[in-house]
Length: 211
Image (tube, rainbow, N blue to C red; front, side, top):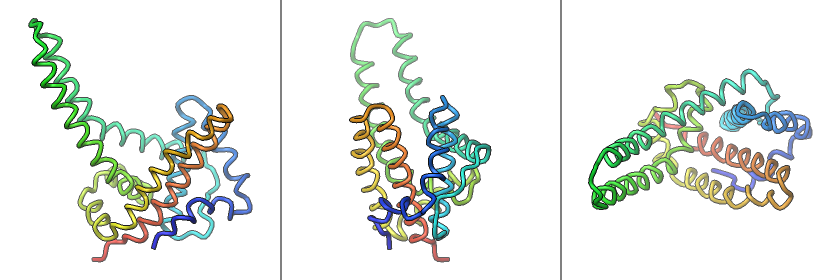
């Protein structure tokens, strides 16, 4: 079972939540590496939830969290490669073509758009499973265990659909902080990451693959 509401409140169940979160949130203000460190911290929180830790918020460890977050960033680049490569395959022929016809760019644009839409939908469905698997196992290869992703998704479809619902809700919550300018957006953005991480951790535990 996935407790959807718990994902919104678990942070505050930890009496030391402010002390634990203030450092990674402030570190996230550092250009580039700050976001990597925060993501690594969020991933460790996800792992703790998946493993049933009573108070999943860990103590921030800059080096460890930075490394984990950077590895996750590299994984994201690998998943972006199909779109990047296809974009180049479309862009280069169009650029070197000397014809003024709009037919070739239009056809290639439609094909790229269709592929991009299908790929984005596929990533939306499976990225939560991939992220949770990587967070728990912390290996580069674990982000590409596609059979494992499919088995877990099929083993508890409802749990992962709740994660997707959480992602949609997060998309509405995150921008609300903009009402209070930058600091508000920073806090709501971080909050939604922790919210979704809790849902992912719950879903990962609930979809344990039965051998």
